[in-house]
Length: 216
Image 1 (cartoon, rainbow, N blue to C red):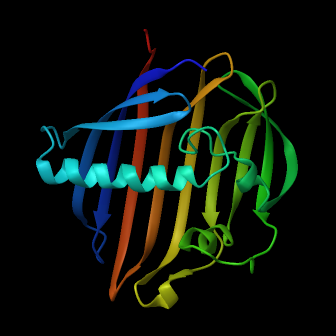
Image 2 (cartoon, one colour):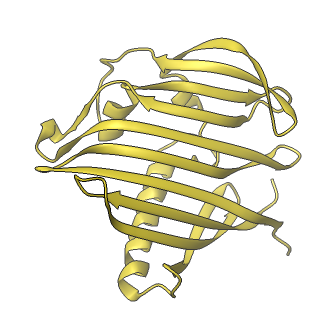
């Protein structure tokens, strides 16, 4: 698969208990996808060049993501290829029908956890035991074209001491940019829960544009 570079814009809004926006952050990244891995370079925060603290935090986030990706048996970065064999094995699927997405035929499939009480080794396992939704698979190339994910019941973090996640609604759209080449082009999320003793709600939105093949 050839390398690609593109621009990603993400917006995160945090709300207080009254529903007012407490903090809004817009970040612009230059992204490089090459040799099955995605690398993000933070170039702008709220219209300005990122400060040293923001660059350091982004670098730490990237290291954390790469560690998680490294634990996967998949050869590609799960940020741009979420349908990994490990993920598929955790769920039961049911074909609901067909629909058209971006002019291409896709199979619409519902999914739910095979075992809501499956062993929990990490916090992400606790979350995966509680999510369900629908996924649309491209009929020709069998790539995810669209997905909607919901949280079925509240998830406690570290026994509820650190907090809990009460609501999760997440959508993602992936677009074909070449033969067998798909990228996440839009996503939105709505998360509601408790952080220590305070209620919190966060909304996210992300869009990727201007895809260009990497030239030697």
